Image 1 (cartoon, rainbow, N blue to C red):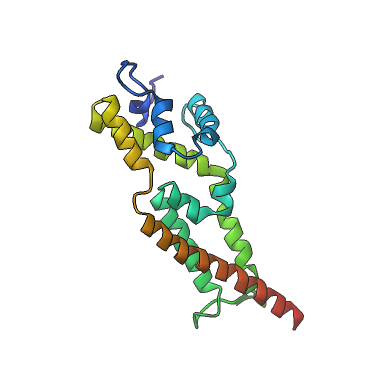
Image 2: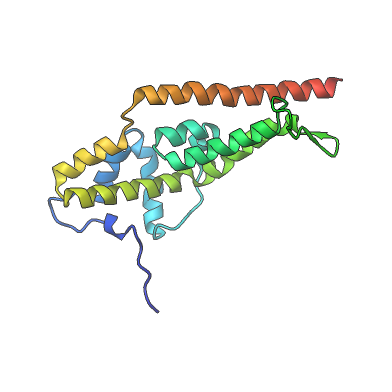
Length: 195
């Protein structure tokens, strides 16, 4: 039986004394709330980096903000695109919106759909973040040639948000958009039921 190679194998420490250990590198990259992620990261390591279901309230309740804050831009864009498409097709803002199927008003379930979209990120969010962290550590290790100071500096730069204005813009654009969908759906549901 041949052993499969894992692309994250270069993340595990090579044990030179000058190099950062994986847990040190993770702490530097994650920065805020590392202690909340460390137990999950250790469980994923023990499970040979395979997926294990965990729960992240941040990933579930504040999906777009959490993905953006943790620099998982591709999942952020996918989540945002799916949310926008659902909102577009189930609201009466767009003239060709599908607002009912078989007499059932879809506007009332837009909020439920928005909540359900957060469930996969609640379940797999920490694992997605674990993969991101390990990938960034591997890149920093390669760029720094295992030099402790260089690697530490690279991880600090990669781990934090370098554009506070972009974060503020994203929060001001995404949060009102999501809240307006939820509030309009709730209002529409109550108005439809009261008529």
